[in-house]
Length: 242
Length: 255
Image (cartoon, rainbow over all chains, first blue to last red; front, top):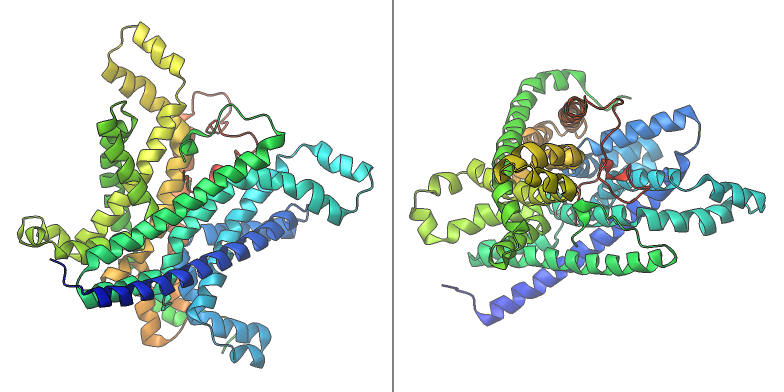
């Protein structure tokens, strides 16, 4: 049935490996961007300022209500024009690569989800944590870095794991903007060898394996972060199984 | 370049095409939602069965169709299944031979896998005592499921269901890769004709946004109607970790 020679297979495997590396880079870069942006936005939008809160609501509503693919295309096609509008002549000369567009789009979209998680977690911290830090005259910067955010991370971890695994499944979308990632490599190999079944199944399994491995790590991390806490007896049923 | 990135004349001109695209998107949302839900029930029962021979295949189904990105599933169905000779000559080629059929199959399987977990989580959230009490009253198992467990599970799982439906709608934007002209594809083709990067895509964004928020509003009303007997319309949250009630809001429930 198969009409693949061993040498061909090795060549395609190398291409797939290179693609997988790009996918991984893209994923980690976008997740980092989403995480940093999300935490900053989450903390900033807790302010009582009406304008900031309204801006947050608009931002969250737009990016949670629109497909990531659309945002990727918008930034890929329109990114140069946007940069030109913001930076002037200098911006117009910047070329948007599929990789850059993908990182920016996924980062901006998922920052909204991360910010939502962070906001929820901060709002659910006991008020005493803030009051205690203030009573001890801890400067705000250290209060956030050493007192509040570590606790926020523990509370937000299950949600962050959701964002992580959901985002992983959206990274292949960037291949539609022309990025030569794992999925693009699989598609080329599938077309050239007329063996689409094998290549796409293999690609799917790579994603499943990566997501399973990271979920396992996340469980370990969760246990570690919870070590100072009594184990919560009831876990969310929807995510009870790892 | 004018100050506004949107060209109103072009937007107005492309409205009919965008509405056609929206129609395709709605069709590709509703049908797989129904098929996926119908598939999810038997698979969920198998998954929850104490018999390993039933539970294991169901679990593998869920892990595969949830873990694989939708784009790959779509490629797999569209390009991969055509490789199978028996299928090509069989009666099901009407489904698998057309892009629409492939998209519906891939989307339905993906949705079914997610719904199995949503259903399972909701059913497990129903307090066991209620089921035991119903059994003690001599209610048949079928009636317990239909009139005791399901109504409660629906209320517990409504939020998760809403999240799944919303992210599913957004997921349908990829069907253009198998030559279906949905909303995203229409916007893309207008871009390719006019090289206006903002007008078509932002218009499509507005359509998606409206569709998604219509669904959100619908779910909110549904939830209010389901909870109409409660004094205040306190949202029924999944009994998750304390302090994380709000986060479940927008993020798709994953394992």
